[in-house]
Image 1: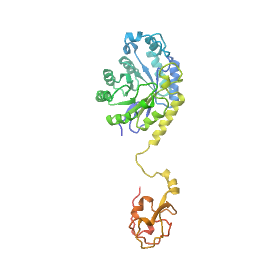
Image 2: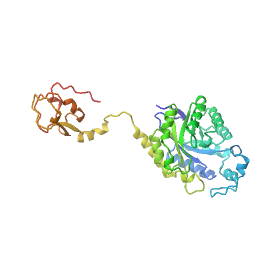
Image 3: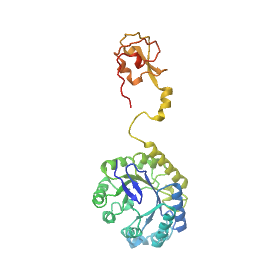
Image 4: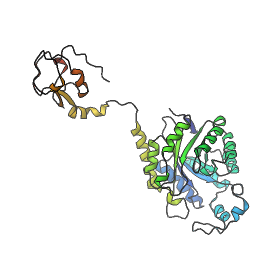
Length: 359
């Protein structure tokens, strides 16, 4: 069983616990607090576990020249990149209002801290866990300082190498064992051939004592559902109210109907994963009774005959006789009563037959 830990109060991840589903609102709220609240409500109504945003302290995330850079993209909310980012950035008080709203409707609330000062604010806010975005995963001093806060962590791995992820693991594990690594490819939208779900298996092998998850930027839900079937214990997908809205994340985001379908499909797959033990199940008995085959006599076998395989065949038969998997065990046995052609071979007809114990 994979390591498990409490990610949010009362909510465990890893082991046999249900996959934790994060709906990444990010900055798809268009800088509008009321839209952000509508999105939190939508995420709750669709059945996701957590509504997540992105928090930056812009002067700590960007240098002055980066903020002053002209930004003429169709997705721009300002003439410079700084104006654009400030339009999309909620204040501390607005974050407190969003957190309160999430608590009132009953859904976990957190944000990616996009710089060290943002992490300080989120720690003060009391978020249940820190999300590390892919852009900060190789920011090792940030990783160490965030781990030292002592809150659970979820770390995406877009744009990173396995060597970097090993270093991240080696830094975080001794300080804060309660963390999860997500396979991620940082492209929007993400093409299927660039997803590389097999990295989930590689991470499970490299880091067997932590849960592994998946952060997806592809369109649709099938790939994320497949990630859960491969063992992802946390999944994250961007969400939106309208894919046609301005912003680079919207085309790779799930609209409400898709998010609801994703949650339903994940829960269905989890139920279907079941047990690794292969055995005859009670639900199969009806089919077995109707179509299960038995060993029958290919020709008449008189009493006293020593059975050879060419005397036997397998058919759906009444009454039920020896199951097909025991046909080789019948070779060399002596018949004590006549068995007619096309008749079931039963234990009563075989001399000194020791019935195998069946599960």
